[in-house]
Image (cartoon, rainbow, N blue to C red):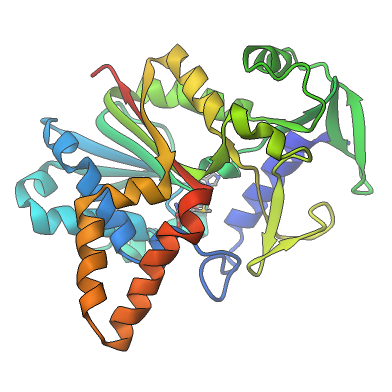
Length: 320
Ligand SMILES: C[S@@+](CC[C@H](N)C(=O)[O-])C[C@H]1O[C@@H](n2cnc3c(N)ncnc32)[C@H](O)[C@@H]1O
């Protein structure tokens, strides 16, 4: 018997470390960097003036997938500001050896990229897209915690974990009569990231909710994805991507303990629509008639419309 948290951690690791295709049409899901290069470029534009402030700027990306966002951010700076590009270091924290291989290939033209297993001390930006939702969660309900037995069945045992109990109290969830997901790993990660970040910013893009919205998920938010659809049987399927939506209120609340100050929390749609580079690409594609431009325009609209509300952006600063 294991806790749901341990079960999820094992499954996610197995899934990402296996060599099978995960991304795009032949895989299990699309992410925004997979849709179009403008996603990474827009992030680069958003961060541009902030990064220039640092003498030795660095970006640390968590969970870089196929490396496309890194490629698009670096290509954007190489073109827009060769001086910044020369000074910039790009670190990738990634657990999957097969994805690291692919990232190395995609990023082979960039000498300033390094793969790390421990967080370095940096000044700059720590960023991630669809990373936090892969971190394992404790699942609790009315004083009990979810476990999975050897037969793949759910078993509810008395909640004993003191840190989970403290979380429920602090977030004001203790009396809620619904499934609640508690990501202690997210909080531990925030602590480590804040130690790594001497000064700078933390940018999180992911699907998630706040405390005000938690009642919309009475059965929780854990899902398994396979071949672009939600799979019903997360306990028996072999390789599957399991995720839990990110509790952004928790990242904002616990961030305070680590001097991470929230500067912005908004939908991906509003975020992208506020970035000049994204808007100018959108506009120029609107004037073109080639099939490629029409296709790209529809992908940009997907980032704004179907993904735009589900995905949220959290932007925090440390010691600035
Ligand atoms: C859903 S994919 C997103 C990839 C990429 N950011 C994108 O948007 O296309 C999640 C990524 O996080 C990595 N990952 C998941 N859990 C991790 C962990 N605990 N430590 C390091 N990397 C992890 C996966 O291997 C994968 O690269």
